[in-house]
Structure formats: structure tokens, C-alpha cells
Length: 246
Image 1: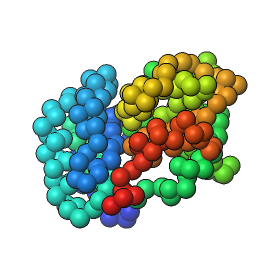
Image 2: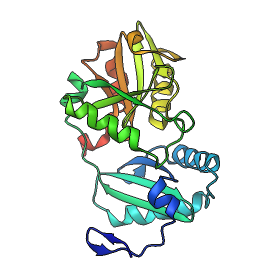
Image 3: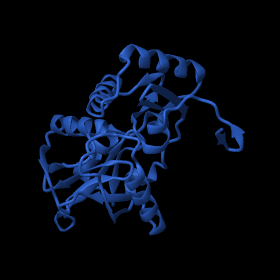
Image 4: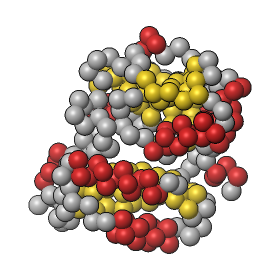
């Protein structure tokens, strides 16, 4: 027998899913009824499922789930949708999305280096084995930070607890390698090229992060860590959640 919040829970969740984080997921934002970069999210979900040996049910199954979720929130200007796949389990969840205060995109937030490291084999994949990220987020918040940064085994800054980091320095936008394959971050890199910025990929240690750190993710868009310089404002504004204007 299982109890969830004191009530019987009878859903047939496999033990590997329930106890060991044997799952992959993706989180995306919906604006005005349109899921952002849905094709890229499903493609990543498929790749990561295959890497973990999970059977992917096909895009159509998830597209139908998304359609049902959107129908349940016909008046919501923005939603946050999470799609999860485990052994024999497919979950789709949605909730209204409330954007961060607009002032944070003008003044920036604080990112804190944590002692936590990404998994040496799973860092690229968005899995349910999420404990290091939760610990990093708690570490940062306990020290007044918004985001906690994680290292790899060689001491490179490779990921955030809930965002993917980039670094802007002297006209170049560096995509920090070694962590999760971030959908929003790749869109940021593409847009930066359109705006005439140079884009490079690099492994950087904490002492090499001189410049402006940027945090990309479906939940935040593109959020600067610290006040952004003028050259970055068009890029930051390009990824502001549309909910501000709804």
C-alpha cells in the first residue's frame, strides 16, 4: 500500500521511476496557447529517453497530451508544461505560469557557486535523478542567491540548478559546455548570432567567469546575473516572457 499526502495512491508507477529517478523530462513555456520550441523539446526528450533505454511512445502521444492540457486552461496567457517519460509511464502536467518581476531582468540576480557536481555520466540528460540540482538550489537560496552553479569532475562551471549558463565577455557570448543540453540556451545562441554577437563554446572554471553571466531556461527566458551591459539588453529583451504584455 502507498499513501500520497495521507491518501491511498494506486497508480502503477514502476519502482525504478518511483524511487530511482529513472525518467527523462522536459519543461516548456506556453505563451498565448503556443508551446515554445515544442519540436526541439520533443526531439530532446526522444534522444534522452533512448540514451537511458526508455521506450519513446512517439511525438503524437505527447502532442495529444499537450492539446488536452491547453484545453484545460483556455484563459491562461502563459502556462508551464512538464512532460515526463519513465519505464511504462508517460506524465503530462501544466500549471499557470507567473513571470519573475521585470526588475530582475534590468538589475540582474545573484548566482552562487555551490559545492555540488553534476553526474559524470548523466549530466547531459534531463533525468529524474535530480538531487544534485535540488541541493544546489537550496545552497544558493540559503545564501541569498537566485541560482546555484554546479561543477563537473574537473572543476568547470557547467550547469545551474534550474537554468543553463552562458557568459558574455568583450563582445563574445560563451556557451558553457559540460552540462544539460539546454533548449532555451541554444535558442539564445542562435539569436545572439542574428544580433551580430560572436558565439563560442567553452569549458570555464570559476576563476575564468569574468564578464556577465547569463541564465537561460524555459522558466526565466534569459536572466542576467548582475546588471547587464547595454550590448546585452536586446538579447535579454528578446527572451522576456510574453506574459508581461498580456
